[in-house]
Amino acid sequence: MTARIPTPFPAVLTDRFDRRIDYLRLSVTDRCDLRCSYCMPKGHHDFTPRAGWLTPDEIERVAAAFAALGVRRIRLTGGEPLTRPDIDEIAGRIGAVPGIDDLSLTTNATQLAKHADALHAAGVRRLNVSLDTLDPKRFRAITGTGTLAKVLRGLDTARGAGFSPIKINMVVLAGVNDHEIDAMTVFCGTRGFVLRLIEVMPMNGTAQPPARAGATPDLAAIRLRLQERFGLVDAMVPGGGPARYLRSPDGFYNIGFITPISQHFCETCNRVRVTADGRLVLCLGRENSMDLRALLRDGACQEELIDAIRDAIAKKPERHDFNVPQHRPLRFMAQTGG
Image (tube, rainbow, N blue to C red):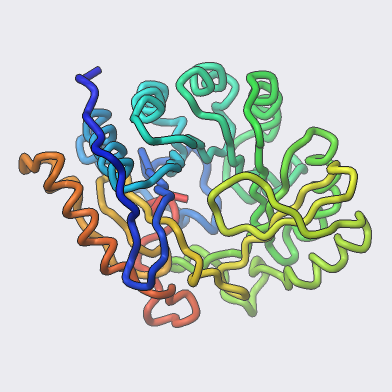
């Protein structure tokens, strides 16, 4: 490990719309061991060469630069971050960056059982686990490959390692898995997990258009039905993301709703993303980005990196363009980072 990068006294990072940016989603790979249709196009093989990924040293520098600008939360994403061989080292480096108070990770959990203890020791405390079904055959149909039993084993291991909260991200697909929402609610409640229901985001053709099977059904109607069945009331759950939560009075059930299309939350957006190849993406639903890898590999000092990030944040757009088909991003979710 390199010598610790000094972190100056943090500033407050805001964009031109006076939104405070305090949350970075940092992708470490665009590769994944699953092939979910809404995340990665079928037959895609055009992955970033490993030499193009940010190295652990470069990732640590980026994390330290954001920390110097007042960012307190970092989430490791992919692709599937646990497919990267040095993921435990990367987590440890970021966990040791002064100023980073909340380190979390998004995973499909297929390899979580063998990484859980090391990730927790590195400082990762919160997990988001992508899981769209509890049916083994449907799991294979949605993901294109993989075994549900490995995911469930990973979840059990993570609970035992002390991660909290563990959030289950269920992308709701009409006619595919929407009939499983109640069963998933009970599954999560009995294990102390937080369930989050997510609308499909139409990125580069990976999501189905609304008229076809696989689009997101009306989450507002689903929310009302779940409120009535489980006696849910408005609640807060730890995290830096955009979900709106409900909870049963006894705390048994916790359900979040992420609705970037039907009820966008752009006015409160507090996050940016860095892709595995070092592009700073200012909005998930726009093409605006900046090449941090080029700066790093051209010899920029830490102060220059910090200044470049600050300048880029000043160009963060006001809102996404998901509802404007001709303006939708040309990259897909696995390339961007969840």
